[in-house]
Length: 222
Image (tube, rainbow, N blue to C red):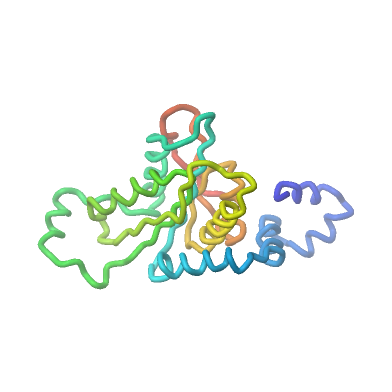
């Protein structure tokens, strides 16, 4: 269990050895997972095919993992608003162009040198990626960047003991770990494993206490 390791540091017998092996405590899972995890060919095939099709050509990649902790989970507009607020405030995604900027851009052809940013969304619910995709399809970005949004799967229900479902989940964890930056839902083991595997410093989405987006929407992990 990924939450068990911190307790070992409290034991004087283990501490002297662990501090030598892992001078930076927060990297324990990152190093162990890279040595101990061995995805099957089926899983790794999913990872490489998706990466080359959707992420490899981008100059910058962003992973967004959304886990809804609710008695009746699904798509919630306030969660969508929180994701957009976080990514734009933290300059992970550009703002949408104003009407004046949009009119100005319409006078010119899209530059071949426009920066491509690929956004990988993982969630049980496809509406989050669809809304983000439509947002950047219907309006240009204020920076001129081209934002491409994709989501490998959106199965709506966690299917315990379904092998293919579990394989897809592991593939998506690996894909998130390959992104340049990552935003995840706080308290999500799925997100924790992904950013730890990639050695990334995530932005954590606060858990909404009501049906409104928290303000601030997220915080950078220390």
